[in-house]
Image (cartoon, rainbow, N blue to C red; front, side, top):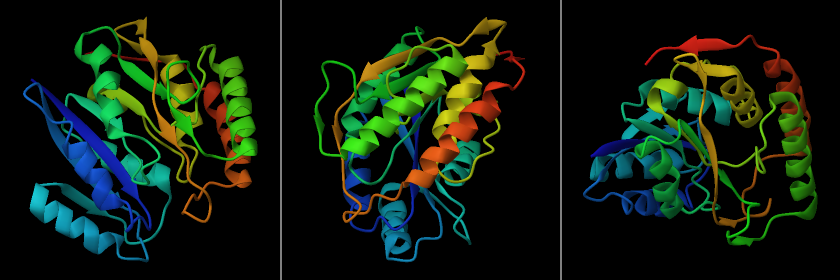
Length: 243
C-alpha cells in the first residue's frame, strides 16, 4: 500500500476545483491511499468556500495564504505538509487528467525512479488546445533547461511532477510565482541520493489546454522569469541526501 500526497495549488478556480478533486479521489484503490492538500493562494472568488466544503466532505487538508504569493509559494506550503510516500502536483484547472497520476507513480512504486515527469509532447499522448506561441515558448524553455541541466526532457513546463517525498522535502523552493518548474528541474538534476544521481523518468500524459478567457494565468513575463531561473539555479552546487 502506497500513500500519495496530491498538492493542489489554487487561485480563483471556483469553476473547476470540485471536478478536479472528484477526479483525484477516483484514482484511490486497494493499492493507493490519498492525501489531498489544497493550498488556496488568497483567492478572490468562491474558491475558498468550495475548498472548505470539499475539505469537510472528503477529509482533505486545506491550507490558506492570507495574501496572494504565487503558485510556487503555494506548492512550497503544500510540500512542507505532505506526509505521503509519494508527492504529486495537480493543477485545479482540468488541463491535466488525474487518471494519469496512476502511471506517473508506478515507476516510483516499483523502485525504478525517484522523480517522474509528465510530458505533453511525447508520442502516445492526447493533446488538445493551447496557443501556438505558448508551445514555442515551452519548447524553447525546455531546450535551455536541457542545455544547463544536462537532462534530455521534452516538457519542462508541465504541471505533472511526482517525487519521492524525501526528495521534494529536501529541496528548498525559492521561486514564488511560476518559476517552480525550471527551478525544480535545475535542482533535481544536481541532487544526489545516497551519492547517486536521481533516477528521473518522463512519461506521456494527456493535455487539454485552456485559453486566457477560460482562466489561464501564465504570461510572457513568466517565460522571461523561467529563463532567469534556469540560469540561476543551474549553478547551485551538487548536494547529497541520505535515505
